[in-house]
Length: 389
Image 1 (tube, rainbow, N blue to C red):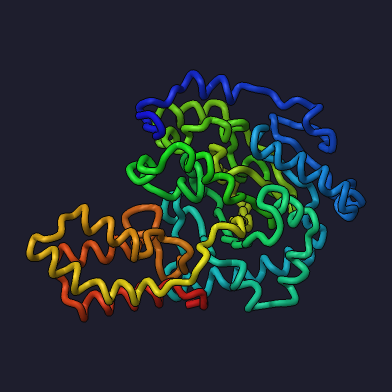
Image 2: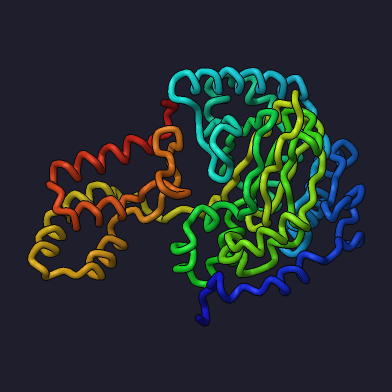
């Protein structure tokens, strides 16, 4: 349908042509090269450029073009030069993992088999609370800051999720990422084509290596240029697209302190850790645009409680149809799962937690009492609070 993407209409031959391109060296003048079509930058050599505002802008423009219309990914060698801070952060993260596993079994992953890894949700806040001095040293990276600003502009919103993949850990399936990548195929298809174009402009994916990540330990599998395939959020679940990804993907090793950044629309997947001794720890950065926010603060929980008796009565008497419920709840309730506290509000039956809108609609159609839905709404709000569990 015009203006929308569907999986059936995606063209694998077009995708193969797009991802068969080669990086033009003239497009990446500040890179040391582009092995396997992935531009690589030496952050130590670029130190003066990163400290000079005008030169920094030239570099950021180069990185933005890579993310937008180029390979879609670049590697920053020695992005974090304070390796002692990385080691201290690693030790803290390992303690957090042990404590969380002892308490609840540990965090789950979105795209990997259970047991393959250990995950720390909201590693950013947890590290800061555990050791603010380590946090300050760890995040004092001009290169990481410039990469984030290159794509999202100043005042970006940083989050981080540690992923520790053990020896024998299985690979992820090829996917795209947040926002639309975290929606089901059915929900993704309801968003118009221009929103598919917008989604990857709102976030940036990154990762900081906490150990030397060899190819055998499973660095991220990447398909350069795949972010430029516009219907990709409709295509990534298709078996033929995933098969081509497995045939054509590339991987680059990372040293401790290196960082990788890529468009969330790039087809990618963590590799298998086939080693017997490498605990592959990478701190995954999920950075968002400062503009992804509404203009006013709204007490949507209070609105839902006020509306529930009215909507329930209308549904029970037949005065309101399901379409009526949908349009009213769209105006009043929170229709998006994020941001949330994934320790307390994990995805259930999908890639994203239940929304307030879905909770309300289900309660109305099931004839739930006001007291019960009020308690459920309050519990949902508590689960989203930022404080650590």
